[in-house]
Image 1 (cartoon, one colour):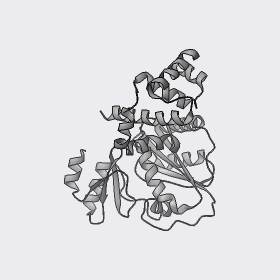
Image 2: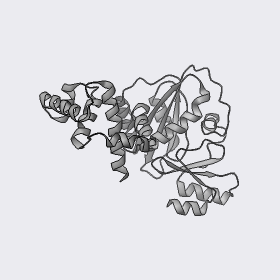
Image 3: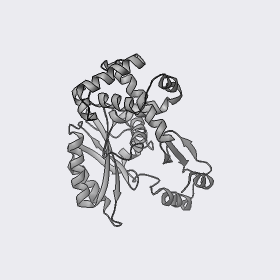
Image 4: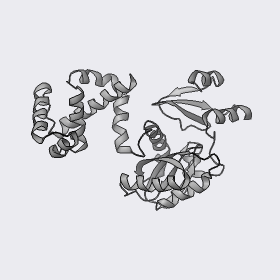
Length: 288
């Protein structure tokens, strides 16, 4: 359903760059970095049912689920736990079978990980796992584990690896932010906070970065050069292999980039700076 149609049905709704954690709010992702937030306090049962049907979500978490109610802002007090560290993993799953048992799938994914304190669905197709120890698996290992679950349940699952906390009180704010970061990446099976945060921050500061971007010569070859060096931590040999270039050819392009822009891509500060501006260039092209 189109945004304007939803607004006509729910005129009290607001558009926000991030999902609200306020009590009785249902937030629907309508675009990259845009959410429609609907206060359900004064809605009738029929209007609530329509909202669930339109958004394919449940307007509230399971009754008595203290962790879900805390994470989504319905309760302000965190459940008691003796855990010294807490890490949130968020999942997004598509069931290809109409009568799939979500509780069995949730049990299966919870059994896949160690140190699971709690797990739950927040909507019909998304939810979280709360761990008491940080994950140490690589992205490749996690993707393999998800592939096994998807093969058993005929599902398509994506996972977001969130930050680790020593206090549970910060979890609701972090949960909302990481939901937003997760929603912006619909392609990768495993999405990490570290890979999502830079594009998010760049997108939030497009007007300020545009003059800096305009000052650089960032054609498609330069963008590929910068990204390859960044992804290989500045390793010239690996970057050359990634670009299918001879090492000397890559060194020549690095020197040419420095002559044109006054920035040395072998210097990590200069490389990160150029990479940030390259991210902005990619975002602009996607928006067009």
